[in-house]
Amino acid sequence: MGERKQSVHIVPGPIVLCGLADDAHIVAIKERVCGANQAPFLFNPLDFPSNMLISLGDSLEQITINGIDLSHPSAVYLRSLHQSPNSYGSNHDQEMQQNWRRTLLKYRERNTMLEAILYRWEALGVPIYNAPSTSRNITKPFQMALLARAGLPVPRTVWTNDPAEVTAFTKSDTMIYKPVSGGSSTRKLMPGDLTTERLSKLAAAPVTFQEFLPGEDIRVYVLDKKVIASYRITSEAVDYRQNEQNIETIALGEQTEAQCIAACRVLGLRFSGMDLKRDREGNLRILELNPSPMFLGFDKLTGTDICGFLAMALMEQGQT
Image (cartoon, rainbow, N blue to C red; front, side, top):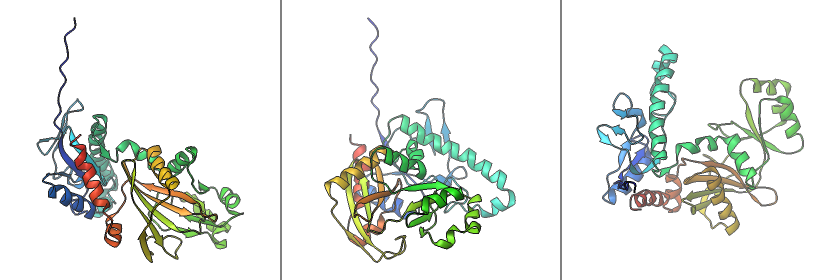
């Protein structure tokens, strides 16, 4: 008879909050977790490598951060890794001006280590909100295609730098345009945008072109296969961000709830803030799923408690 292998009981470590120490969302979740007599570990990516010591061995479990064994945290909330020297809080403008190539090389080495930690945690089965493997699914031209293939309602969209494609796609309907990866507001496509001179700007970068949906804006939060909050946002602007006139909680119908939960499942997200909008027929279409959405403003304005739901989910992972 073969030798019986003894099972190894792993004691989960602390909850890890990955983000800037002064990020309001990190602060709010930390306060909730501390209020429940738990001590989360703040994993501030901008502390590394100058003010954080990390060692990774040649086995998945060898993860030491500031002398602490963090091979098996009970759960991880990933706000951001701040992987660009231009990201908020990085303060590398002067260094980039002096030697941008060296600065980018340093960030490449730094990012490789930080990503490796998250990949190891995911491989070890640590619950992550949201796991790094889902990042490719969030890329908008891929995200929308995955949702469409799953039969979920999305608006007609094309991502292109081809002027002829833009002309053909936009000739029969009202359209909007926006950046491929975000970072700027959505605008309605006007006749002046279709001139040869204007379309020649596509040689510098591709653009998202999408059918204009004239109906109301809906924001939905999904956590662990449940809709935990949903809102109607009133705005006269094409892009409601920074142009909200009113925000109110609403109840979604069963079909819409099921679609939102299915969208998170398709993209592999445990937690997401979703933007939906009604088309001319009044049907809701999915515009985007955000893997690290802001939520404190919605909680403050409407009395919901997305922060509490998320903190509780993180704490419950360590009890299972």
